Image 1 (tube, rainbow, N blue to C red):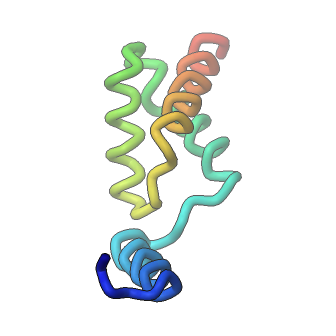
Image 2 (cartoon, one colour):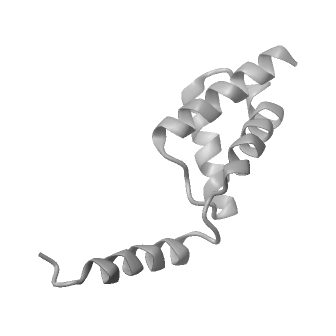
Image 3 (cartoon, rainbow, N blue to C red):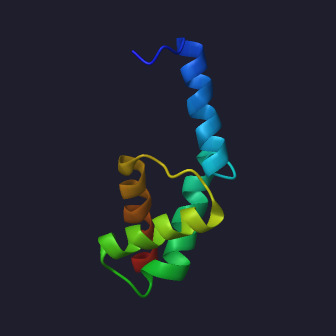
Length: 86
């Protein structure tokens, strides 16, 4: 055991996240990210793994906490679909 009380460890995790990222993700971020990916990346790049890499790069540049892997997959799929439709 780490010797930290549960509340202290939660605070430590939250503190580490805020120092690594400028801000936490918000629900509206997924929609904005999918639109950005469709417009800027997915029109030229159709491989999901490359689109995912660009998304993660963009999140690092903007210092936004990345979503879960499952959510990233859904954002990438949405961007690829939107780029194909438009």
